[in-house]
Every structure is written in structure tokens, then in C-alpha cells.
Length: 276
Image (cartoon, rainbow, N blue to C red; front, side):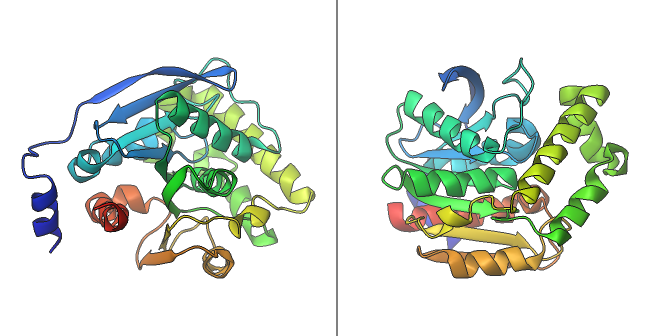
């Protein structure tokens, strides 16, 4: 069914679109972005903590099905990756800042309306953006995020505070962006900011969840070591918008990378269901 739909919609497609990149002014800083596809429908991809366009969304930028139907636009949030210098200064509202910056980038690129895709911290910022700009957001896809911080979350974060405890692959990917010392400094700053938010009550975006109006696709890896199931259960109840849910039984935090083909197909079908 999926192959028939895809071939009918995009019969001339042979390979994914080439990727263009550049920097664009947004809220007083220059934000680096990569864009694949030339479709009129835009899809903004917001990375997780310290993430960049390629560390977090390489398979999506190279996806033939997504880039045929959408202009897939991924950003390096301010202070991350190529959106430096300077390095990120983390404040209590940094997730809201990324939401504002992402919106500004899409406006600067000429998209009055667009869809969202966000992972981990980026998923949190996506919800904030969808709640604050309901007219602009068509659909939203999120995974790996949480709307508040619990004692259990802090215990899990504490285990990641030492960068040397990360998987070799993930650590080296991030060190290639920030260098060994730079990665440790930035992760320490992120961790300290999360600790401060927790001390102030731990609310990341609980107030915004109920204000989201766009159709939303929530995905989850059942074995995610960073997102206890209570966060997924909370979001499933708190969202008042049309909601679709899918769970990867053996998935961890990076389901969009580990199961890239299946993930991209499901996202395409979700986005296409109301647009074609």
C-alpha cells in the first residue's frame, strides 16, 4: 500500500534531493541550517541536546520519501555545531529559545505554515512552538522528550554526566563537533541547567501541552534509557489534539536513527494523510 501511494504521488523520483546549507539571521544570532528538497511544504527538524543537523537528522535529510514531499530543514540550535561561535549559554528558558529560533528560521525561509519534527530536547521545543504558534504549525512528530523532570530523571541524567560513560560511537560523534574538552564543558553546563530547572519545580512545558492543536504523532522506544514510560503516558493523556502513537518494542532513545527507514516511512504517511 505504501509503495503504491508513494509511486503515485512521486512517480519521477529516483534519489533523495541534494542538501544545501547556510546561515540565517534569527533573533539576533546566525543559525546554521541544512535543507533537502524543494517542496512547498516545510518540515522543521529540531535536534536534541548539543545535537546538530547531521548528528541527529542525517537519515531524514537523506530520505527520498521525506524530501520528495517536504522541504526538510534541520537546524543547529544557537550555540551548537555550526551555529557557533559563541558556544551555548544555557538559561532556564533555553527550550523556549530554540522554539523561537526555529520559528524565526522558517519565517526567514518563507514558510508561513510548516510541520515539526523534534527529538529529545528538540521534541520539547517542538511542543512549545506548536503551542505558541498554532496557526503556523500543520503537524508535529515528537519522540524522546519529557514535559517535566522527576527524581528518577535526575538519577538517569546523573549517569550520563560523565562523558566517558557514553557509548564510544556517540561520544566520538560529539567530540568531532566540539572537541573533547568542549564537549565536556557544554555537557556540564547543560546538566547544571537541568539541575537548576529541577530545583525550581522541574516544569519544562506542562503548561503548553494542552494548548497544542495540530495533529501530533508521538513515538517512543520502549527501552529508552533516558525517558521513563510515565512521560509517554502523561503526554498521551495531556495532549488535547488529534494524537497518533507508535512504540518500538526494542527501541531506545534514537529510534529515528536505528530504525530510520521504518521511521521515515511512518512519518511520511502521517504527514501525507492530511495533505494529499
